[in-house]
Image (cartoon, rainbow, N blue to C red; front, side, top):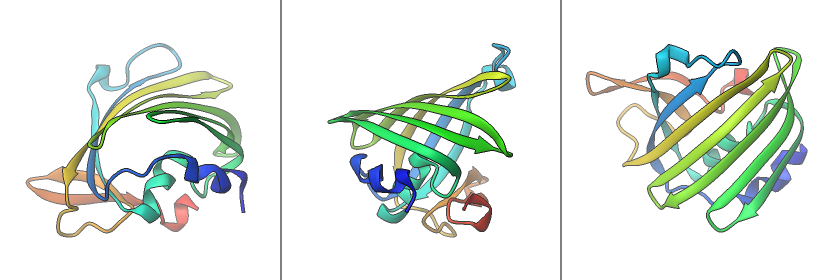
Length: 154
């Protein structure tokens, strides 16, 4: 079992259902990705998949440390992205049962990529979604981009 698996239980579980994430990314050169327009995605979360979204489950992390209590947590990790070392630092604030805020960075040899996200509970996962699915909503329909359990994420 990887080090981050054992510590994953220290994060509180979000309620099961569909969560919408609005994320703004700042690149290593300081410029905002997509001129600062938020990247909006949805995820279908259940108890078996929730922690994987925060702890990089199945990724090539040699260490992962979760600290915190109550509503505020930090995750620090040493991982690899496309075979190159990266350091991960994430601060998570559980605002209430339907809102989670995340501020994080992924630092590589080219510098830190920073992200700020707000996740909001939307209700039950919609038709066509399975736990772990990630994607977006187009014309009222879910369009899957990935699943946290897919082989490529392991």
